[in-house]
Image (tube, rainbow, N blue to C red):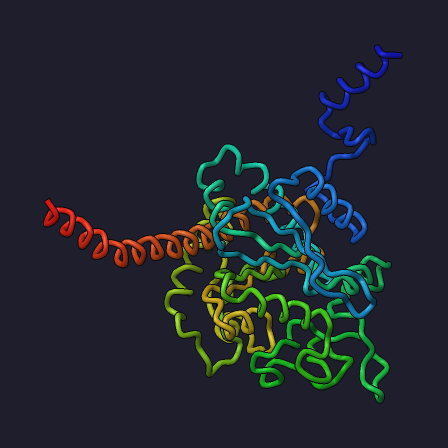
Length: 362
């Protein structure tokens, strides 16, 4: 009996496909496949259970169908206040590569922070708030069958005179709401809702960002497709006050992406490289003072569009990860180098004064 157990354990180790956790057998999470919402939720629980020192989960809202919107908080505990990076995926249901990226991102940072000194420093100074699937209702609906695979919106009912369902959550935020790139027809894929923040998913993000707006320094929202990095704002007549810096940071990220598999990503505001829009989460984040806010539109450029094959998950995530880390490293280094310079500027006159006083005391 003992020999059988040992043999089974050795087989698990050798294959690397399964593990025994808490006496139960678990299949290793496959990062090269698209996963259902149930599988993603189980993965989130497993990630938290296996990394209790650096991972916790936070329920910060509920969907129209009463599902709990949950993020993973990843960071090394600190007694001093930390800054934070927000990443959300899956605000549009049919963009399955986006939740796949969030899962990959979590795997990469958890797999490297113990051996990579820079990643360790990032987790000491920053908390990562990562929502693998924001539009849970829509995502689940997109898995129903072939007729629903390209569903984009949420699943809330339309107006009294409209039988269609769903609001485009990325048109529902209180940022130039209803001005450009929207539809008032509730059957449209870009229907922006009855009012700004009519959707509980948008309210959940708004409330969380509002509660942490002084801590969050970087906001990344992951979409597909088009191979783009978008900066605020979606309105053609409005620019972010740090637009030039955002473009520089975005272009550096695009360069990092291209270095991985040679894919070109265009960088610019939505009206310049895509189309005008309003009410986006990216614009809202910048509007409330989060300085670095970007939308990633992952592969491809239209060959497969929202039906990106699974054999492209890994290369897409690999390149997007380098792009995201280019931005995060820039934001971290600027934030904490600036803080150190400021602290030195404040402390130096005081220290000099104390030193002079001590000399005069002799």
